[in-house]
Image (tube, rainbow, N blue to C red; front, top):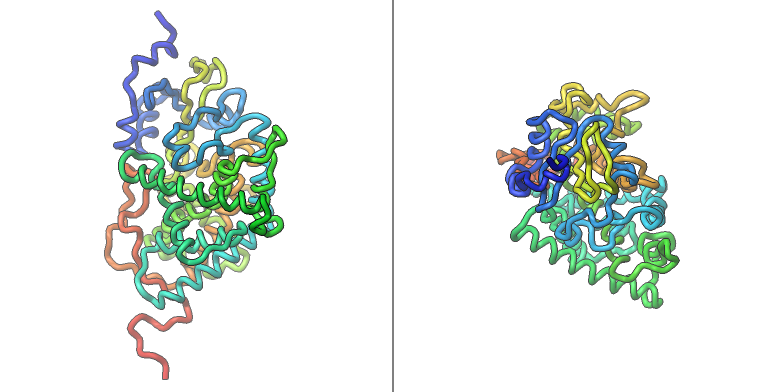
Length: 427
């Protein structure tokens, strides 16, 4: 009889169940077999799914799992881009990753971007003067304007709206067939063309890039081979600075959802002079709410996991949503409790919302600190504002990847200094 890893070709393909069940698919599959490794097929290829506390170091060890050729073409053409850092391994990955680390983990740069986001948020909120907004759309526009200005390509309002819509489309359509996926492909192609032309203009001297900006750094970057990135790949990596920042809009809506459902959490955020409670709240949003369902790679070699064979080249999946709700890692995992991140050693490394392992050399996102800082600040702004939330469908469907409250979270947002909606003007 053939070994189990060779017989896996007879297993049913799970692509359709994944599309139908979304975030619940992989946790349910792992629970059903109650084993540390489960075999299936995905997009026609043999796959193994891992869980358990030692799954993360195994998955993020390049001796075991690699990214090269692991990301499916439809995901590259929507979410990451062809030639992106996510698809590299070894020295090529380390050199490209160093560029992102220098850009995205600088404390001064993180503070500057966070301050810009807060300024833009307050300006956008004031401009609506208590009018009703779809929070997701407002957050996307605020984040797009902020990160583009920070990256050295400030945009006119019409272009900022297009960038916000395109980045949201790239994220929204990467994991599904049909119209959403088509919109995501079109959005990426449009922005890659525009940013490639911008990089070309910088290189020939027709456009000045601010010193130290993402635009300058990416345009001047040289890879492990000593050569500059081609213009399209440079555009891809600029989008890999901009798009993930705009994607904080998903977490922003989830933060508002949490505050709406648990208003008792608001005072701690309002009175948080040190910012510690806001950071704890941001971490719990990233843990509790569904964003990345799982991450995947390819087995680098024939190896074994808990005694089970893993064949070279097979797809390796690491459950993210299930890990974030694993009762062996989190007490009362389906309760939203920011205080679980209190104390001198908060369990932040257990969160895989932006990858695992080492950010400098591995595949953990170097922009994670930006996400936490911006999300903490926006959570504080939401607590500081007055949120009037009309009746709507705030359920969050787990069958949809990525997901949001069905309504997009419609609210009337007013600054503390604004008069109540409908109040007579002061005389």
